[in-house]
Image (cartoon, rainbow, N blue to C red; front, side):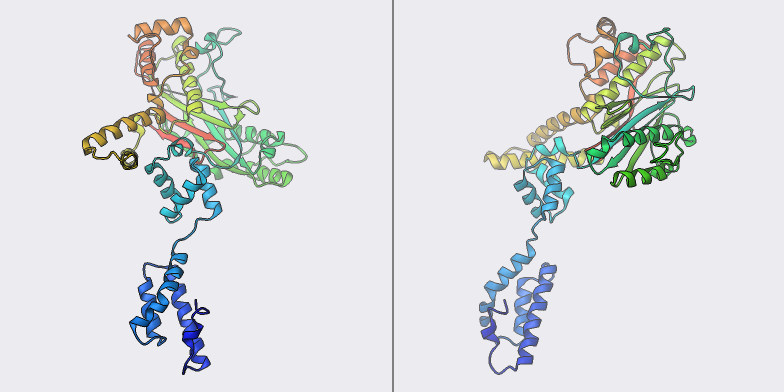
Length: 459
């Protein structure tokens, strides 16, 4: 700018005076670029006059165009390619839309995601949990006998009823279950046998932690990563390459061996009790109990004592819900677990989206009452996707078998072949076991998820 206006600087001024006033203009311009709300263009123009470069406001017109150009170039912060990439990964929106959203929200990622939804970019909701990252998730349960077992999906009616294929004895109800996520930098390390073994040994060690018995029965919680790293493995990952038995030290040794940063990202615990069943499921298993996504579901149920048939039914139902949670990835376990602030925020976003659609179509003119009815319908549909108990039950036949499933539906007064939600399936199971049954806790960890799902029913 100063170079272009060098001719104005000529006259009676000496070289030192000229240089001083030139630097003064630059200082004002830099201040304007850092905070345009405190130093608008008009303020810069007044500063130019105060420096004695011009004698009247009329002469300021000479400066007006380059000053405006300077102001606009500094005040319109361009989003970086990294921010655009991150928003695109989080939302699934196009690069152009992501760039526009970041400009409109001053490069705020959360605000940009909200802006996209308010402006009708539907891909955001479906992909909002995605993020970059590699690693593995492991899930294991602790039995009353002290042993550990990986969760299996119910593959037969006999299994669903709680019978083993050998002697027909009742299965043990898990006392607790642990879900663990360990991250690596690349999928090459995630496929490494030593890494898989480390993840499995670590989740086993976490399940044996003495403090798992603390806390209230049936409650869910996140375990401290420091506590997990301080536990002892029952055997080394590799006697020669990774000999340490302490989880934290073994992690460092394995990290040095594979040449990547390895991180225990998070660990979660669900406790069971006489009135609560807990079950889990691991999807896309790389080895028993270890895969890329895992889910834990806590089921609140009546005390059925030692009745093997009812215990087996509740066990199978809990496992089926864990499978469904892994497949559909809901954000909440029940309607009661959705915070009122979240509902209100979603309502406002959907309202803005409806109004935007009206403006784009050129129709407009809808009353507030009509708009809110549309919003209520969309919010209901959204909650049917994001709340576990409102979803359609996908694994009903695998819980009880075809014939028994039909009988249970008839006993509960439900139509065969109709849409059966998880909530309705709970009512059917409740009739069969003689007491209320409902999902109460939900945890989902997964590689590629932006954040874990942790939802507990409000008491």
